[in-house]
Length: 249
Image (tube, rainbow, N blue to C red; front, side, top):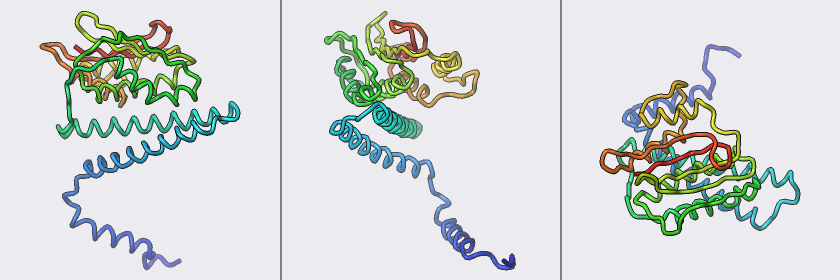
């Protein structure tokens, strides 16, 4: 083929670029991306609902099929959770993130997130238990904190062997929410990254995790006087695995 003339496909692409350049000089790509993320989140939410209905009406015939259902449920939930985080972080950056500080019953927040992840935990054969006083109430943004717990539960489902435990207590006038699992525990670099997020600095590994960034920012929104919320990662706990803690004053 002669190289004297460009191909038709090249001409078409170049014409399209030339047409777009004048009008799109002021295009806010972050806004376009956020809008796309919002649409993807809604579509994936519908997909998750449909998947749960399929699993509910057609029980897996064997362990192989159950494992496939488990993978589908986990990956769809994980992607949906990350899209929610990205959209929240965008709104935070734009100073347009709604924050509603209301008194909520912790047990009700827990029950919402347990129900939200019920199919995931059942398909993965993981026992999810909850320990919280029914009368325990605290001031926090229910939707934001609920999304943090949701994300932690999804991660716990990936690494747990067979058990995940969700609990809440008040210690030194601070609400402490713990999500524990019986997996292999958190590596040191993730524990260090959580400490760095609380200090608004980069971790020594220079690999800040999106989930940790999201959780830390939501925790920081909750303040009382000089004290502000924080997160903490540790190993041990009642299940001798990883422990993700949220501290809300």
